[in-house]
Length: 110
Length: 113
Image 1 (spheres, rainbow over the protein chains, first blue to last red):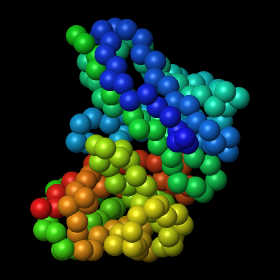
Image 2 (spheres, rainbow over the protein chains, first blue to last red):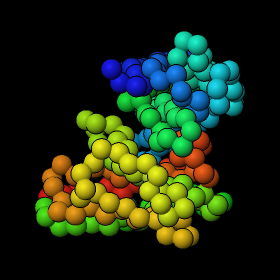
Image 3 (cartoon, each protein chain N blue to C red):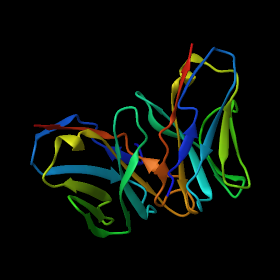
Image 4 (cartoon, rainbow over the protein chains, first blue to last red):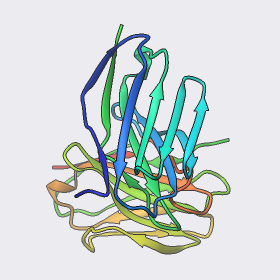
């Protein structure tokens, strides 16, 4: 079993819809949680960073962490075609390396 | 504020050759991590350097090595290149821990022929 599980998709939704992306994990030591967006042939771009459980909102993006369920989510409101990309969850603890999910490919249909 | 800079952006090498990739982190960041990204394997962690010391290491053969300089710039080297080394090599910098607010460069796309 992988430490971090992420549905690879692909996921296609119409423009304006709310998108929900999720990751589950098995290591209860994880305490730092991130979401990255990666466009084709580009480096990943940090979207959201959260520490421990709770919600964090930034514009159209909301990150949720539920440590009791070992489950994190990223919500995108009012989705735009420019949101079409691969979304990667990542997590870590202490001075250990980041552990990534495999990424979910998202397409927003105009 | 300048981002993470990786050079070169593209490289084509022949099997058996060696290659050196460079990463300049964000100013003030002391942790630099390297990743290999391929369509089949996703993001694979290579190693992390902090204050010129390798702090974390992934499961790659000894052909993959790296170092960090006193100004936090980092290089990675791959010797005796194999076709399977063709990938996007990414570096990420963060202030001190490798797993908090890590920012990626645009990557170096290496093609081995």
